[in-house]
Length: 267
Image (tube, rainbow, N blue to C red; front, side):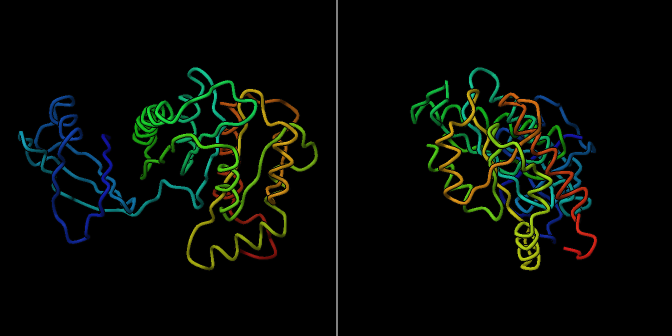
């Protein structure tokens, strides 16, 4: 079903709304929607509003709200992907697939082994493109929110953003022992998840993925010095556009599909 996203919260007593601008153009002129057709609108809270087209005029498309349901498409955590800049269409692909797999925010960054170098203006233009890809992926996959894609930041800023999350880690080929399952079972992870959920919010999990050339030993060491542990993603080396979605798929299993791997203590 056709899906639209609003930046505002729709009050529970609202019985109708009006789509304007590009959304109205798309629904009225591209899809040629007619009165009685169904659409879904997601508001700023992630609430899904089941609507029907009442009329489509030049000043907007008026919708009648038939029912509401709370956000049930989003993970029970926030996943922040900090992604080393990649060349060509690789960034486009990983943005699309990461949104499909539940990412909540993507922050591109530049590091020593990045092939791509963007100045501030180029970075903003690229971010605009990536945000359009994220919106289309959110619509296609039935998300309740559109994950934002930030303009690129330096590596030290990416480390700072990761460190501000409740949980963070850095997949690195130099790590051979500790994997994501071990990270999930770590007592510190357990206590952090317990504390965050008892406070009434979902845990924020940030992770850094290197560019085509990966992270240098110095960069991995810098992350470790800031308290960001390294993990291995297995015996095979993944491409940069594959690694982020692979982590997101594992997070979905470990923190969402089976949120309680501790049989002795529910969290």
